[in-house]
Amino acid sequence: MGECLKCGACCKFVAFTVSDMTPDRRDYYQTKGFRVEGSTILIPHISKQLNEDNTCKVHDNKPKICAEFTGQKEGYVVPRGCGYEESTGKEC
Image (cartoon, rainbow, N blue to C red; front, side, top):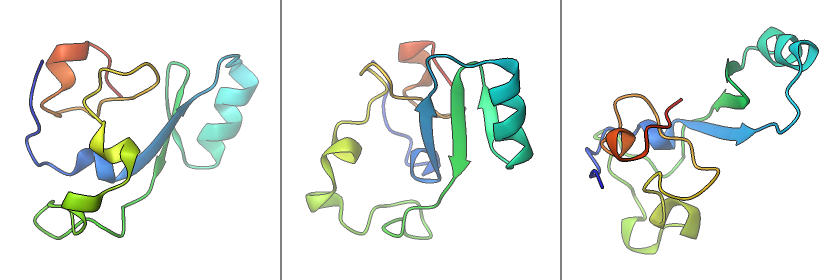
């Protein structure tokens, strides 16, 4: 299943999937500075809860989406180099 390497990568972007990605939409997102991987849009965003050492300031009370992140749920995107990358085969 993989494991967290405490790299902080999952806390440094917001990702979402566009179900009907077209070349025009891809171009639009790229002109806005977003990275596009397949039908996934990656928007740079560093969590305010991320410490300099990539630990979480609110680890014991972090939001549900963070607590459940293992890359195993549909729609979750695993950053390159993430310890969960090997367990899913789906990366950004």
